[in-house]
Amino acid sequence: ASRFADVAQAPPDPILGVSEAFKRCTDPKKLNLGVGAYRDENLKPMVLDVVRKAEAKIFAANKDHEYLPIEGLDTFRKATIDLLLGAGHPAIKDDRVAVIQSLSGTGSLRVGAAFIARFLPKGTTVYISNPTWGNHRNIFADENVEWKYYRYFDADTVGLDFKGMVEDLKAAPAGSVVLLHGCAHNPTGVDPTADQWAAIADLCKERNLLPFFDVAYQGFATGDLDKDAFAPRLFVDKGLEVMVAQSYSKNLGLYGERVGAMSIVTSDKDAATRCLSQLKRLARPLYSNPPTHGARIAAEIVNDQELFTEWKAEMMGMAGRIARVRGELQAALEAKYPSKDWSFVTRQIGMFSFTGLTPAQVDNMTNKHAIYMTRDGRISLAGLNSAKVDYLAEAMIDSVR
Ligand code: PLP
Image 1 (cartoon, rainbow, N blue to C red):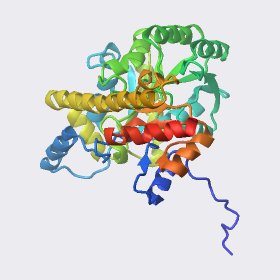
Image 2: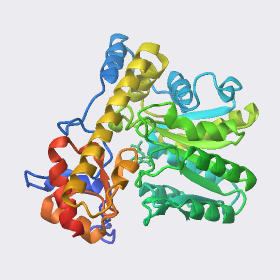
Image 3: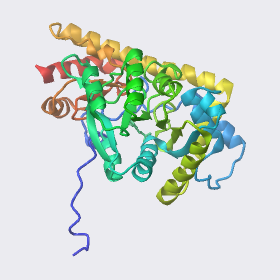
Image 4: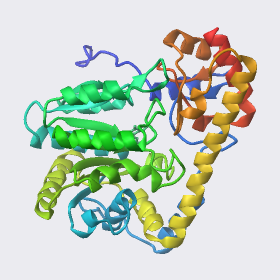
């Protein structure tokens, strides 16, 4: 018998498990709306033209495969904070930002969680939105950081429960961390308005809460990289210190390259220097140093005016395709089932629509119609094209009727 005989079988991951089930499915009508990965109109993975161009430059330069420093590639670290705050931001000029390149959004969040566990007072709780991306809970729980929900989604209005959110954050102990989605909230597609963001920032200030932004979809809310950085920029401009985890999986389509960064914007340069030294110390025993290739790509693009401009246009194209299928889906649902209000489909933003389908209805979508999606009722519109809109609408109506 194996010494590992008592190791229990783990359940499949609620999001990545959907892709595994999709792969096994032999139905030719099958549709994968589970994972939030961009697909072109033929539902094929897409490599951005700017990424191909950046790679050509990198290959032409005949670079080596040495280790990066623990904190990552310098040109990437500059690029990532420029993208977040805007080049020339006072916090950058004053050297008040500690930036460590890490393993995409997930790894960056994890380093951030490790930082909270080690350097914030014992028992500091992280408040996360209800609902949120499923992995947030795991990331904090596995670092033994306590987490609690704050109210976020109002199923009746299919909108933000702003009152509930404010009440919960007001009740959070001073010094707590508040995890906020920078834009294009996953899974709901519901973001605060500009005024609501300002009120949340003021509340964080009053209650001495530490905002921790998860920026995984910069560019996918409005199609505009600057507009989508509105919330973290506003908080920093209001004088708040913030933690930020960034991912380039979605907006550069670099999923498998694991490109991202964990940053702490502080109120003085010395604090940033010390925070960076500790972020490095946390990363060293976790993975030593981050991967090179994807960071070079992101740096080439953000630091080069021509490529950056081209990226912005491609970003608009991706966000625009999603917005178009959103509109088509809503129109199909309204045509087929006019007595129900489907306006939420185009009110929501980003990659996802939070359909309100119950787990049993999701099972019907998958088992009867071979449409794969997470059991919380989320569908990724990045995985939909015009040709499949009618099929999806009919399956949704069959499932809710
Ligand atoms: N945060 C949110 C809200 C996400 O939706 C995702 C990916 O789905 C991530 C972070 C991290 O993704 P990655 O680790 O691929 O950058």
